[in-house]
Amino acid sequence: MSTRTGLGYDSHRLVAGRPLVLGGVELDSDRGLDGHSDADALTHAVIDAVLGAAGLGDIGMHFPDSDDRWRDADSIELLRAAAGSARGAGFAIVNVDATVVMQAPKLGAARERMRERLAQALELAPGEVNVKATTGEGIGFVGRGEGVAALAIATLDG
Image (cartoon, rainbow, N blue to C red; front, side, top):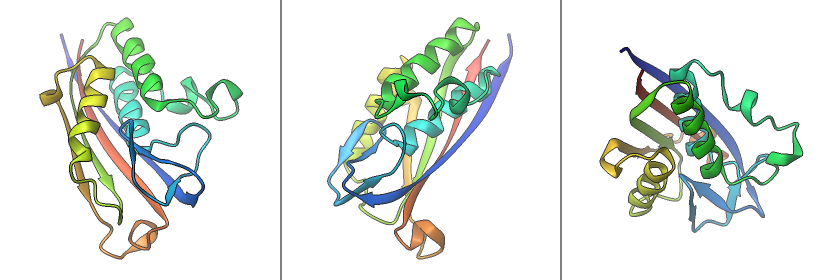
């Protein structure tokens, strides 16, 4: 048995007219993330972390934005499929730790709902998933409020 670790990163631009979805939770915001699917940067980072740890490529290989099947897709369902692929390759997902980097809105109580949604999709206990938040401290695209970034790390045994 070996323990493997994968790292995921995603970022999306904030735009008017779209819902802001992070970790499968819609947040109260006048702008949302621009993308082919629901543009859930947090869930996309977790997907890449899980796929990377399993040696199964990345989100773009499994759910390409050139394929209309994934237009406006629910990223939690994509995570569920990616986790299933990892399990199908002989891996058990042990835990996930993730960080959302955004200026506003503050995640506050939504973090616990995000944790629960991600854990459910991964078939983990909520305590095996952690979601943190930080700001861009006024620096770069995040600090200027132009977008959101997310990072995730996943540990798998197989």
